Length: 151
Image (cartoon, rainbow, N blue to C red):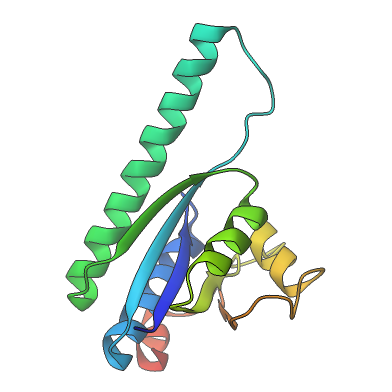
């Protein structure tokens, strides 16, 4: 089955990418995979403190992914695949795409203004053209009605 991969985080653009992917998957008979990434910690705290920080980060990622999956089910009546991974975001995305042949496209959205975001910059800059699937970019400033019409 054709699956659209969406990386979910707290940004408004992630919700745009999610909506586009859900509607596109419903229209094409595909699926959606939601990936929440737990980035590496910038510092190492003492054992118990570090474990608490990591547990909180995992819990937050799980909540984001579950919320995204619920939104997909409500929007498109599709049960999303949820993945929670730890690591550097671009490396995790590349690994997930490499491990799952059914991923047909990576769906990302740009910020409404300013820099496009680190994953967009990475996969349209230095790593452009190296993925085994297309990268679909949703403009962050797009009107929801326009997004819905296009998807």
